Length: 483
Image 1 (cartoon, rainbow, N blue to C red):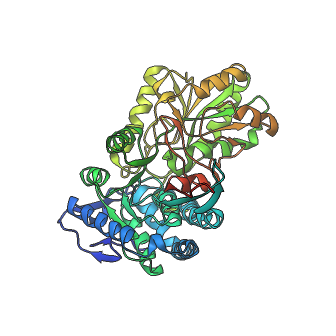
Image 2 (image 1 turned 45 degrees about the vertical axis):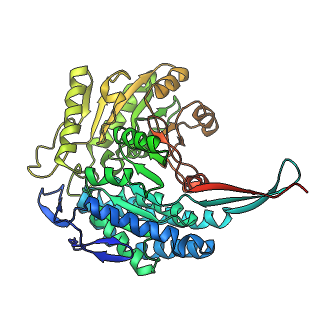
Image 3 (image 1 turned 135 degrees about the horizontal axis):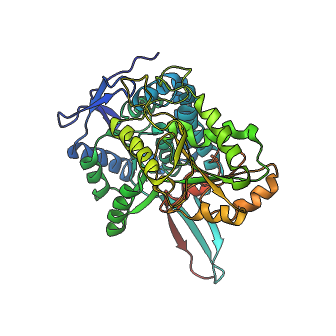
């Protein structure tokens, strides 16, 4: 087990510097409820310093003017450095947020390095400078210039991966970035900063701070910030979007989800484990989790029973134990939120086929039993609101048209899936689902070379693929006189 290390400084302008304040973030283990490490709680003045360093890198440093190939090489070097220290990063994330160890290396670390590698590959073919013929026959040079200084505000559930979603395209385009890490998971962010330092990026290109709401709000409002890239709750996304709208500041928002997995009549029950994993990954603390399982009424009981059998066998335990399937919720507040929804489900008439409470054998830690809810109607709160825990709601439907209608009857539109023995038919049905991504017979609900993001209340903009890089450029047309 990697030693979990406290931090005493923040990373600004290519240097480790003390915070201007004396506030401390205490990282509390979700397994034991004990403080395992501390990190500085960045102040408003620290945010000002980070913006100044990034602004200097943008306006006067070599990074935006560097040949793109050099920046792509830096992305690859950063990915390799993170992977070389991947187990330490994985252990740190599991200790911070309760992610099961069996998933943390692949799901937390490799997802991040694969993201960076994908942006390095996509960036090679991404044209930043092109010439086209104008309407009067003249040459028009079209430049994709750096969007400017980026504030990358990241959540606690998949912290390194989501940092990479913002960091990769910013590096491709030459946009300096300030990574603002969640106070629940500050430690892995500083391991990222260690990697940035190790590969020798120019000062101010990547700055890393962790802070709470007030300092984060200050960063979003800062006049030196050109773009905000945020991942988190829909409520916070609305707040950030309103600020950016008022200031005419660029923003991309990857927000919540309440995704539906449509199980068709010919569904093979041997796929139940992967279907469950699509909703339970990272203890259900994932925005793209498939937490509404839509099953045909003719097979409803069969699907519910198979899911309940599998979920009942899942091991609930310490997130650092390699045998654990479901670890703790990240905080006591989150545990209480999930338990509250289980109580709401019972009040609304749903029943827990398995799970439904906190484990009786756990007197410490923020654990919730993995739960399958049956008798759920799509109008119930547990079917409409994001729970962010290991809770799956199984909803019956009559006919595929009703299945699609139920899937689309949501304020969210982030992801979804269709499960069928006839993959071609499943793909056709997927085109009717109003979400940013739809997986066919798999829990893999994003692709590193393709756009990821949501419709409706699930956000604005896309990450990954060349479309993700598009969010980090400004277009400039240089028009010759007609010949």
